[in-house]
Amino acid sequence: MGLFSNGREETVFRFKERSRGARFAVFALLLLATAALASGCSITEPVFAGAEDKVKATATTGMIADIVRHVGGERVATVGLMKPGVDPHLYKATKRDIDKLTEADVVFYNGLHLEGKMASILEKLAKKQPTVAVADGIDRSALLDWGDGTGQYDPHIWFDVRNWIRATEVVRDELIRLDGAHADVYRANAGAYLRELEALHEETKRKIASIPEAGRVLVTAHDAFGYFGAAYGIRVVGLQGISTASEAGLKDVSQLRDFLVENRIKAVFVESSVPKKTIQAVVDGAREQGHEVAIGGELFSDAMGPEGTPEGTYVGMVRHNVDTIVQALK
Image (cartoon, rainbow, N blue to C red; front, side, top):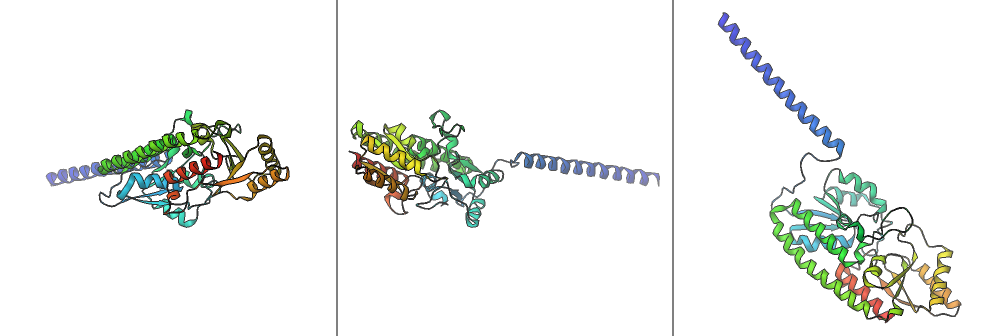
């Protein structure tokens, strides 16, 4: 009887010890999960698990989607939210857009407040899944200050092709981190695209330099071409500021009109994603003062051209802009 009692007590003691151990392990896991959620991070690094399934990537702008398609190739199913002619400063995500964002394995966006009305969505998304701002890969010394005393930077980074080279490297590195089994594919695709971008940068420098120095003045609907001007040696004057969130007023129109008349500027440019009425008002105002100004052509600024056209790619868009500017100002 005593032997049975001792064996039973030992069994009960061991059971209690195992129960305590299990409860402690569960408690530790709960603490770890709570800490991770509080910090807005996942417990483990997000790694793409489907070895053969395509990585699903969603990009905000067409320019970023174009990078992802070049670097990802057949390995990545790429979705772009903003279509041709869409202004990213004013863009509001629809329910369908939010579905595309939440269903993606990775989200790429510009950053620097370009997607201003999507900021809160992107912040929440970053707590749950890989959400990458391509502008984060650009050294702050290469960024242009907004100029309004707020300390913000001009978000139109793609107009210096060297910045877009760095953005491509950001996309490449993130896809390799998520889908390391296919790192060689991403490196090879990125290498080919980077060489194309380097050639585009040199081509752009050469073409803009062909414009007589006195005529290198680019007047546009809004101040999206600051990086372009700084990189390629052309003065840029915009009717509106860096953002299109507020419309140009009568004072802005009058000041630009006077600038055109005083400097005998021969051509101004409209943009595909900005209403043309205000820049037309400037042209009409200059004509009333006896100075004829031509519309030099349409430039693609915050959005690329239609899909399936040369301007529907980043390289084609930049080349179109440069050729249009050179033809009008040369």
